[in-house]
Amino acid sequence: MFVQLESRRKARPPWATFLLVAACVTMFLWIVAEPVSERGRLLNIWGTVPTTLLDNQVPWQTQLVELRFARLVTALFIHADWIHLSTNMLFLIIFGVPTERALGAGRFLLLVILGGALANLIGALTLAAVNSPIIGSSGAVSGVVGAYLALFPRAHLGLVLPLGFFLEFVRVPASLLIGFWAVLQILFTYVGPAFGAVAWWTHVSGFLIGILLALAWRPGLARRARRS
Image (cartoon, rainbow, N blue to C red; front, side, top):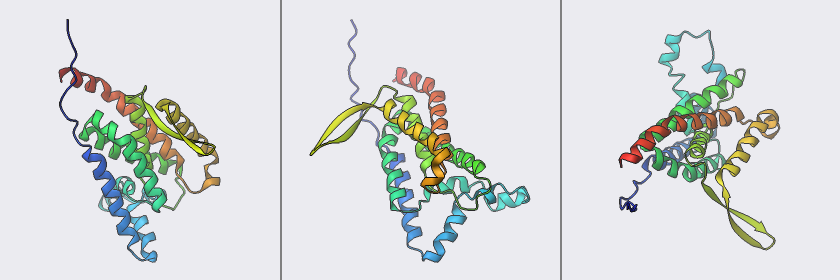
């Protein structure tokens, strides 16, 4: 008879998640410390400007020197305001900590950087005529949410519901909440302009990229779990 014993090995701290949060907060504080007239210039330099990124008249050598495609990555660490920053960081911590522990720090960073950059690229392609920069880690965070769903399809999330004068804490299937969020992102791609300048396709593409990467890594993660 075999008895399964729980491992006494402590989980490694999710340092990659908190490193990303620290980088985004530091970049935000640096930008807001600049004069108002300078902030727009910094956003255009470090953000993903579709018309600049997709300008076919500029030689590729110039694009390499100016690191234009690197801005697909630097844009991930720039946020427009405190609400933009805090919302993304909250979702990054909630879904990033368990996802990083499942994937490992290396895969998790690749998910965030590669997934976020590809999401920004797709967002730029859908907004090819826009001169305003695409900024924020929303595409990368959406990728983390997608990876979380693929890795933990039966997980539950806590939800606080206001019931009259009381607050009720309930556990809801993560797939239900994330699925509802994903449907909203798709709907906003059609009606989104009425709610402000948001690159909704960046969210949708990041979410799908996160699912695909997590599914591709799952067999290797299962083998690693069996060995340990």
